[in-house]
Amino acid sequence: MNPLIADYNLNDLKAQHPSDIAEVLGEMNERERLLAFLLLPGDLKSEVFTYFSYSTQEDVLKKLGSTDTAEMLENMAPDDRTEIFENFPDLLIKESINLLSPEEKRIALNLLGYPEKSIARLMTPYYIQTKKSWTVRQTLDNIKKHGKKAETLNHVYVVDKNNMLIDDIRIGKLLMAQEDQTIDELMDYHFVSLTTTMSRDEAIEQFNKYDRAVMPVVSEKGVLVGIVTFDDIFDEIERRDTEDIQKFGGLEALELSYTETPLLTLVRKRASVLLILFLGEMLTASAMSYFEEEISTAVVLALFIPLIISSGGNSGSQAATLIVRAMAIKELDIRDWWYVMRKEVFSGLLLGFILGTVGFLRIILWQQAGLYDYGPYASLIGATVGLSLIGIVLWGTLSGSMIPFLLQKLGLDPATSSAPFVATLVDVTGLIIYFSIAASILSGTLL
Image (cartoon, rainbow, N blue to C red; front, side, top):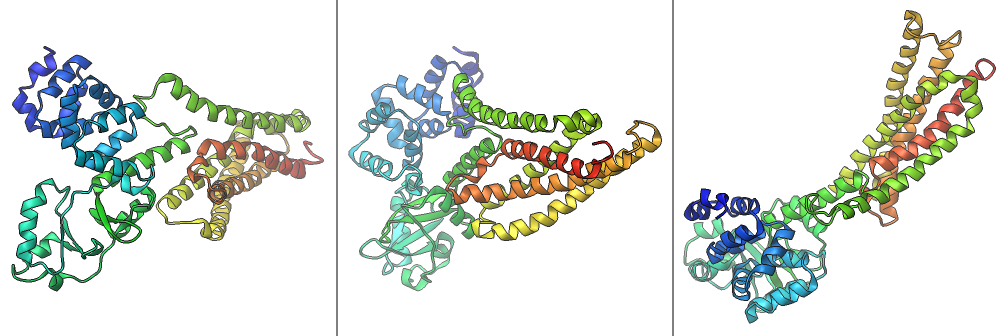
């Protein structure tokens, strides 16, 4: 037997959290992992399975017998089961669903029937509900009867005769009430809910806005159909943020984790963006060839090209990062573009002035100290660099802050306004700004 199994007494392994058990099993080879997994009790087996990576889940499911698979999927929370099915091939989904009991099969098919990115796919139909005419005692008895299967007992949901949600009551309020009080006496008719057609991003906003650990999900007609808990929302937040970070880093979002993504897929998703950036940077070479005469006449100007364009790219990347994140958390929307532009104009000017002053002083001080001889026109070269930095940093800041709004207006993800794209844009235009200012200031002297 694998040493990892020998090192772990089965009872000790069972006592650990399911995520820790999944981690231990994940370090084993396929054969030993399957053997150890089969030794776990039914309920624990279902919980541990949800913590496996997608590739491990698929591998284990293919190797399990139909009886073990049916038991595991039957004991799994419906929302976790739906999430797993979303990442499986269609044939494997079909085979797995057919192993479920009629009731669980109905639930699984119902959840999979909702739009792929809707919040309904993350909900569970297991919750506690009550009627406003019931007493507290009746409700508590109902909790004892059905609560074991419920996903959470944070709230009890009050429905009418048509199963329309009319209120939710915190379990603490219920426990503190008198047993002969009716639910109607405890109700305030103030509740928040999600709709089945709501996107997951919209649902995340609702959880953040109302600071809830669980929220009910209703149909468009207001019928209570399930609940969504924060653990599922947290997983979705992590996936969304990971996707945005990957896009902002200048690559297509990965469907799987980095370690699970095949090499060729990883190269393909990176190569497409790198190729676009490479073609963009070729325009930089074109811009430099346009100013070839100025460069050959005043070679000293070429010394500051990396300094100039990198400052513009950095300022643009900073602005893009700030705006994309503010839009992601709904601090800004497309209507705020004018406010952002005004703010970034002043920010860009101040930042450019700071960098421009440092650039100007650097040239003057180096000349005075004899560290480098810029010739008789050192002060004009310093002014050229200083003013260029002001213009390029201002342009970079405006570009980085406005591109996310433009992308959103076009119906695209603002996160695709990645730092590399902004930097490439500013590289090309920055050279034009730099040499245009140089031509104006140094005309008749160096040029």
